[in-house]
Image 1 (cartoon, rainbow, N blue to C red):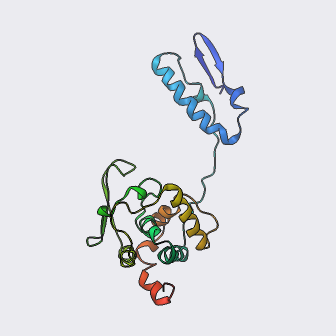
Image 2: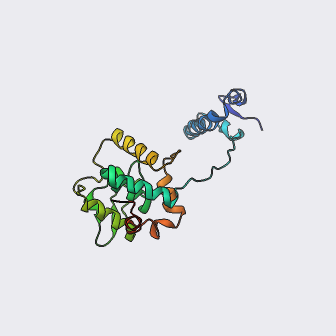
Image 3: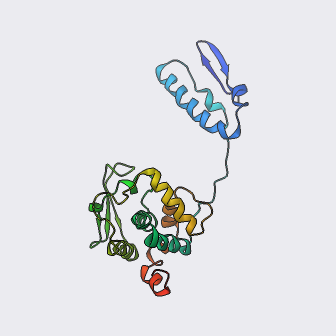
Length: 213
């Protein structure tokens, strides 16, 4: 089907232009054009959307990457011993599935209830702008209590460093855990797709093994 549209009585074909796009650029460009032409249809500038006659690049879905329990143990151990300020960020990411880039950095200690084992994501923090409550597993609470016992700050935001500093600490942490490649949502995906957040990686296990001094 030709990717054409009738505009002012003339028919325009976009196929020659799209054919010059790289495979990586094709879909973003088509999505942008589709939105623009839909706006034109709404305003009565054209009769049909020429993008509807074009094929988007089909990509095979990538396997969702997750962390192993051993990798998470090493990350938490390293943070507890060397980068204590990073520990709450890792705990909420791995054990509660909190979004790392926008939610974790805005959560405050007043949002965390270690007695009732709940984290409150306030509407102004939530990506969906809706308040939600996340249960904390026993091991998550234990790691956070270990953070407190070692003198970690418990006022203000749980992440008390700049975005640039946080990236540096995170990079050093996963490298120390022997992780070669890191994807942005790997902690959240690990929480959602594996069974270990509620059943493994307890701090007592690490203490018994002598991995935490």
